[in-house]
Image (tube, rainbow over all chains, first blue to last red):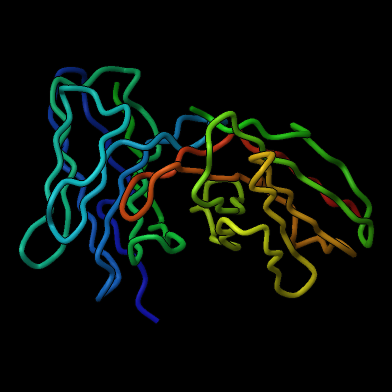
Length: 111
Length: 111
């Protein structure tokens, strides 16, 4: 069965650089979510999209933005990167109101 | 508001039972349960909706007490594969809102 695909798996960036993370949800899933997880922490909700429209916003910094495209893939754009942005970034998809399927994540390291 | 999970950690021998609790101060629409192994994506276990129904598959089940805004996850006859961090996720709305996860319960199963 198709899963949620995230790319890249690993990313190393320097401070103040920009990063773009991509997510390809499971076909026919109408909702995409982005989460940030620091080492030993719980996943923190960033933002969600329902049918390509922004649906809910969590603790997403103003330096971050996201969008969902006509083919349903989503991108998380992160600018002016800080050391504290180093984390695992998960994308998940679902049918609205149902359980999430998470991608394998992108490990971002800011140096 | 973040749900509160207890206990923070549990160490069991294979075959023993465990209960993990999740409570919220806000009225809940549903409760999700996920298991995450180190460095991997969270895996969806089950969703509990308002109504207090108990769900389960295999030797893992859960209940949701709507009046108390509490959910409990029951693992019976634990197997080595049950090791990991268990997160409950809650939201008070419906549809495409993002889940707020608890801080997690670390479960270690020893042979």
